[in-house]
Image (cartoon, rainbow, N blue to C red; front, side, top):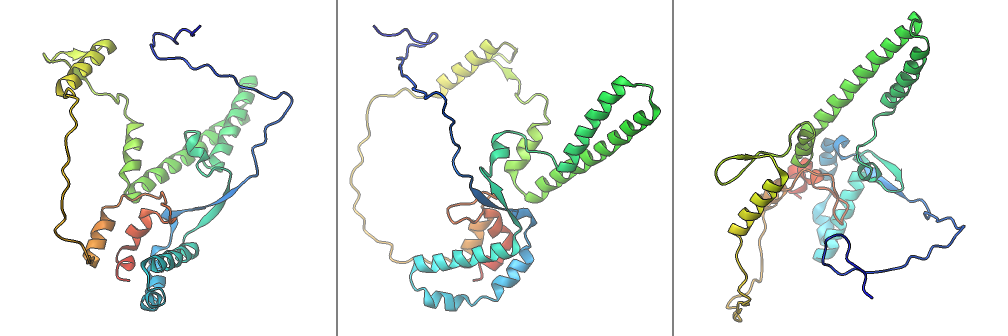
Length: 270
């Protein structure tokens, strides 16, 4: 006998069983360490000088194929990164703070938060102690001062990063009403969620196209010319680098876009 659907959905229901062994602790596996680079604190000027002293023509002559030349180039850049980019080892998942939500505050700030809570509890027991009240006010003053410095560093980091992906979420957190006002076809502002949903539904239905169940035919195209060679100059490479977003997320080669944008012409001239 089939089981009834969940809620008001008309979808089929899948029944499955989970077998759990009792009195057995699950192991999280061996802890791994990942090297995390601080790209915004890198010495890009020294990296440029270091790259200028490399004999790139000798590297190309000893690696004639494109794949071997690219491998040697990436290896050289990674050695340069290891020399001039600060890094530290992170145990476990390096993005754990991002997965948990808000990143952790600095140690000195969290230490003052703990001290502040401790003094507040003691002050509730002895509210007329002048020495304790003085210590509490001094702790509050230091906490607010460090908090302002911490927020100023975050804002400066967002401005200097030149990354819109960091700027817009930072601004949206400070916007009280993130959703705009929805108007119907007659220009009346809607406040009910059902009316908003129906308005969006009518709009998307009006701009959509009904499928006619006809698949277009694609005729075979005969190629009259072939691409034998391609020429890429420095301006093309610089144009492609300038279009990159200034992010620190690395690709398969372990090199982020911010590295090429900060190096500028040093990575193009060679």
